[in-house]
Length: 282
Image 1 (cartoon, rainbow, N blue to C red):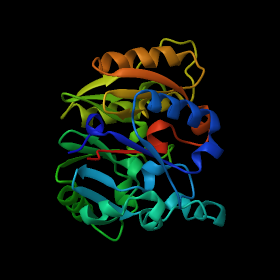
Image 2 (image 1 turned 45 degrees about the vertical axis):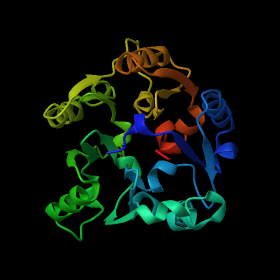
Image 3 (image 1 turned 90 degrees about the vertical axis):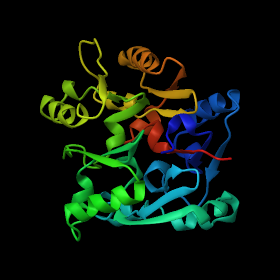
Image 4 (image 1 turned 120 degrees about the vertical axis):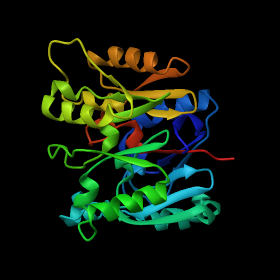
């Protein structure tokens, strides 16, 4: 399974410089200084590349899926922000055509934000079953397992987080260890349910913040971007910022961890993993 430390190239939506100018300037500055190639994708209708771009399982295997999330189907305002991945891949200026020979089609409705690759396992929320009611849970799981070629762990979906994405809950840090966001500060019920699932497979490291009042968007720290040994962590201008950096650095001691001002994206509902698509290219 191709995981973050193996990636070496990053893609963003061409809408990012307009929608999040400060974030875009800082993140590209850091990538440039580390010699990491990045590109902007045309034919995108929003900035959330992670959700609609295919999932790289191996260098020669990209899993495509049906990107029609329920949260974009309610009104014209939301439907017009839905990106068609086929248009992105077929746009000549994106230079992605050579990857199509590695395409595998997963016939399920899915968001890339609900796929966290963790070594030989994929962690996702069970919202996947809600969006594929035409199939039995057993059939959905079989299709996922066959296409991703690995074990699938399902976390319960907290309906308060209506996207149902797992990349706002966990992030794999290697060696059988997984970071878990500070869910215990907002819902002990779901925190313990997550632990019940994750403890069976991983050594779980829970992010904790010693503050008087927990920032409502502190979930975003888990939504960091790792490309090779470079780790870019969202920063909110909050008391938790430095504590998040320290804990993530401790979890990834061989990486360089850098803070990126991310409020522009967080206020729109996502963070650094959400706005990026990082892959391993030859």
